[in-house]
Image 1: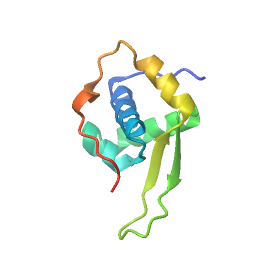
Image 2: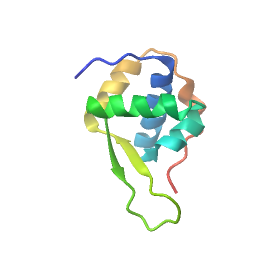
Image 3: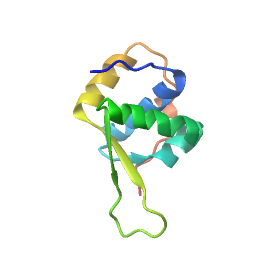
Length: 103
């Protein structure tokens, strides 16, 4: 497992991803931006780094929903364990971030 800097925005993104994993549902970048209050220039590079170290995987939404396709993101099994260990004992904004499953 590669090390990752746990900045406040990274902890916020991980928190949303962990909430989504607990619900068994994927999320997507814009939703993470809305929930955390961080801009896309912060969230998307974090997601790329997390995918690069194997903590998340992303894929295109294949549903027939109208509008632009979404790139869905979900934590891997390795990522869930690593994030839980990395976040243990740290203050996270996320208890009530207000994440909702993708509809």
